[in-house]
Length: 393
Image 1 (spheres, rainbow, N blue to C red):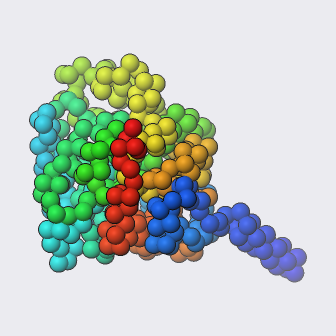
Image 2: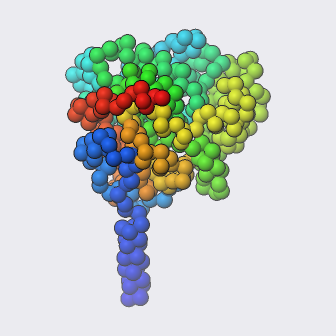
Image 3: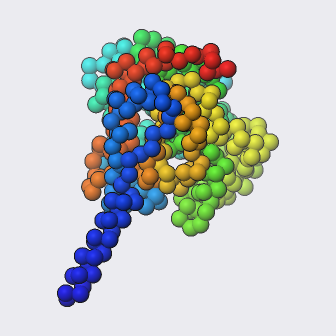
């Protein structure tokens, strides 16, 4: 009995020592030593304190999966006001609006871009919307074509490199609330779409947005794809997401199949994201092959083209995007893109504390601190301190 107690005590001490030394760390803040960094360190306090991953769930895949289950339990479904936006090519997207109490026409707006097959009731989206409500920000969730319960009107769906729909959505938001400051946040593939918009439409982006945030974005699509194909747990996550894509495609098959977007039966057999993109996505959007598509979609080599104050959150152990894929040097040389990198957190995980069953989770708090400071503490004026023409060139 004594030996058992001693062994248990020794094991507990060893575990806690490992946790304190190797798991609990202050996040990296990758950004040049300029006005943006100074502003973040002064106003976004989470950039300065240690990240304490949930002690019983700090492994990357566990953070990725269990965080979604936890948020599914603690975050209620949200009542939105739905607007169907008709696009120039005849397609439609659903915009789900949620306004804070006492909102006016000049209340700041944040456009939320969900991940791969996510929508307005996806757990992490609900967490962001609830934070918007508490932070006096109007939220609008941009559901991609065919997502969120709406019928696909044209054969085109969506992909990480194409931001035409986002451009139209932002134009519409600006017309709807012309006196409001507007921001945007993209999660995972939503971050890829938003990031490519910021890089590809620099001057337009600065006219339509005051700030942006990217969460768990796949910076280097090639390295991210390689990482998620590694056995065994990563590959299981990959298989699950490929299944989600196939399910979406099956639901819109009758619309896309007549357009000749590849062999749909073969597409529906895809067992990985790369395979799905090779069989369907790259063909639908006119790329030579999946490599050509990924070359256009990847974001790690485009930071210098982003012309807007943009805060990013990545985990160093993200199974979809390992630390070596994060553009560290590019961020450290940027005066407008800052990346917060936690040592742990997985993919859209970031569970913190002994008992994470609450709504105030790390990435939601970081989101709220950033946009509150940008909108209500004059952070948006940082944009005017940059030489726009010089950055675009």
